[in-house]
Length: 385
Image (cartoon, rainbow, N blue to C red):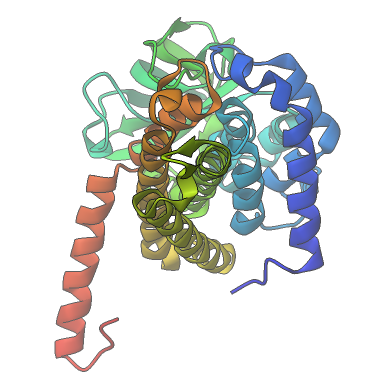
């Protein structure tokens, strides 16, 4: 496992924390927006942290993306603002299939803009009737001469109203393919999505016989699920990183309240029921961080081989963050219920992570299948756990 005390990771964390703290005064405002908060975009651009989500050939830091470095940035950003975290994290999620499956021409044109946030990235997977079961997608991709034609609708797409391009999953013949579609392509229309409990830039995307060059196919025809798995294998664990930040911020708010407020003649922190819950939250946060960092380190060298580890990290960290946020609200009593307070914002922001990029239930089903395979392999002389 990579040592997060390594000077490189310490420098990345320090840089991300400085950026986040410089933007803290905007956090409440930005977390209510369904458009890009421009001061945050400018601050991330100025920091050059976008170098972590594109390869070195296009202005990035390394030839291969480092999930641990990205997770550390997301942890620091999410501790201050969910908007800031999404602004950074989705640049990688939305562009990764371009990074690994796009033509040299497309990558040269678009990835430098992803790094600088001049181009906002989006990945279009889910549909009005399709969530986790992506093999049921109905959006179609077909060849017509030198062009690809995309038809269908996508739903709950992060960044849709502000995206510069979409990496789109669709059915092609008997298989599934992905296409790169600029947001200004004729026939593409975007409408705003629903108002979520944790406000988010989200929308619906409609493709009406949208035509793009055949060279805009990402990877080979019919190989889209491998592209998606690679994306998830790298970025799912960074969702865990973001949840660590939210959980940490919620715990810090609760501890500050519990040390400053007195009840029954003593600080809240001196009451056993309160202190034990906060101590348990601390222990669970550190356990989730250890698992997340380990999984992120493993994913750096061989993402697909460690997708079970990154899935476990995502489940543990997101569920932990929600428990910590709930305990924090309970610790703060009526003060934790105040609309617009930091703790109320962290409480709401902790919830979506348990659903997107693989809901807890879907990931646990997948992990259970992995357990079954390992049990059968153990019966034949293999290693179980």
